[in-house]
Every structure is written in C-alpha cells, then in structure tokens.
Figure (cartoon, one colour):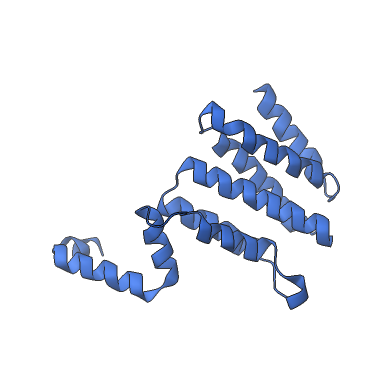
Length: 168
C-alpha cells in the first residue's frame, strides 16, 4: 500500500482523497476533524455518544458501549487533541451514568466500561493546562456521585480514583 501511495502524484493523491471523502460519511467526519473544517469538530462524535449511550428507549433503540467508545477512538485517530478527548470522555461518563441512573440499567459490563472511561478521562485531563482541568474534574465528580447509586462498586472505584488524583 505504501509503495502504491508513494507512486501517486499530487493530482492522483487529491483524487484518491476526494473518492474516499465521497465514499463514506465516516471518512468525511475524519477529514473534517483532521483539517479542522466546520465550526465544531466534536459535534459528530458527541452525536454518536448521545445515540449509543442515551438511546430512545421508547423507540426500542439499542445501547452500545462499543460504538460509543469507537467514536472516541475515531476522534483520537483523526486529531487526538487532548481537550477534545477529555470532553468526549467526560461526556461518555455523564451519558452512561445518567442513562443507568434514569433507566436502571445496572449491567456489570456497562458499569465496568464506565469506570474504565472515568479512569482514562482523569489521565487525559492531566494533559491539559491547569486552568482547563477544574470544570472537567467537577463534572467527573458529579458522575461519581450518581454512580454510588448504580451498584457493582462503580462509585467506590471512582472515589478511589478521584482521591488518588487529588492526592497525587
């Protein structure tokens, strides 16, 4: 593949990118994110999180942690900017905890995914300038409070992570 790409001239490479762009909406999202096109590059990823972590239960929509996590992974591949990653990860936690709290979906695997994302969010938040951290940590603290009512020790695990974070 690399040899074929290296053999393309500028016009050939531009044509390839145009074809990839036209072929798939995910490719469009990736390219818009990579090149900072549009007003809010996080919007399509946020919509994906909302769809898969806060489905319309009255329309029998499925929930999918995997598809929500894929949105974050796709953003990371496209640009991986720490502030955007932190926002997506904290939003993931808020949506997942909120859905569980509202609809009682205390599935152990789902809550494990929530706790893992909570931990990853803390790590990414530490890559941000000090002034940008407080609001995100406060949002995670709200998630932690909700999670005490969800079961499987999710809130206790988050207590430990935030306590370690504040202490370290």
